Length: 408
Image (cartoon, rainbow, N blue to C red; front, side, top):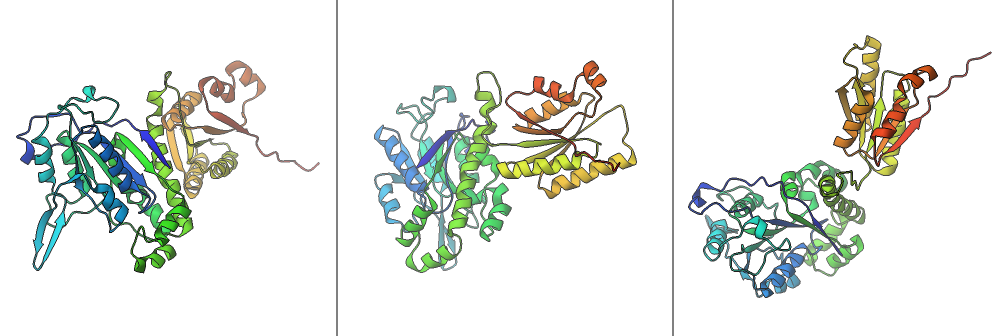
């Protein structure tokens, strides 16, 4: 099973290396990434399948770098596609090889003209003579051999994209920079080869190549991922079922979050189109703020959602020492819950909350019951009433203060 997801490109094309300045300026190539939870899910196979499909339509497809890892099915799927020879790097008695970016550029730029982005049809290469080449590049997170012009393979991909050539690439979710610490806690493995998050953010399309953990373990036992000596070691370590379940969720969530980041622009009326829950707790100088924060943290935990805490400071008054200490306690507690503490200055509390909710795509807001008297609410209205008018598609949780019963 796979999930095809289009994401808008940030359009921040890197500068073309000076050695390629003799080529005229071109539109940036489009980048499609095949991502999975672990080795063996079928990312490279799926990329090669699409390459064959485009070749049958008359599109010039080349393989810039292929890593089969001895997998027969993958090697067989590459048959019939042109593979650019690797560049050799002599190291004493050894000869190391790696992707030859210069050869890829020379091969592609010498044989075709390129269309502008607006001339692209159906969000993929077309069969016209003026369309860009398509290059298939495996293992985006790879570190190049010493002596290469660039340190990382994704940097080579950026050069190729900047030259106006489309690229299909593959990677596993554990190689994403922002997930490095989390993956280490889950699996006990520190991933050395990493890809910056911006590479994912700038991709034009991301495809999750997904299988169940059970299917992946079956592939491992059948020798379709690693050779026999590594199978049991892999099952006892990285390929444990609990690891695969967590990594699978990370892969699916990462793509969902990328989609969500562009969802507002794609809706007809510009409203929120959130996929995941996000909880915002609104604290104040009142003592019940700690109670609200704990309740919000439980809600975020139930929903497996990020937790945000907001304090809106009144610009016309200073906090007392006790009030400042109280807000500091809330901030410290928020961090203990692994949440994000936000402090803004605004004389209009309702507007401030609404603005923060929009900026952080909040879906659930936790506030305390109004501390105003009935007379004040009649004159100025309650915070709850104002938020109901301002917020759209956001659930509002009003938490009652704990009542202290005095002895008679």
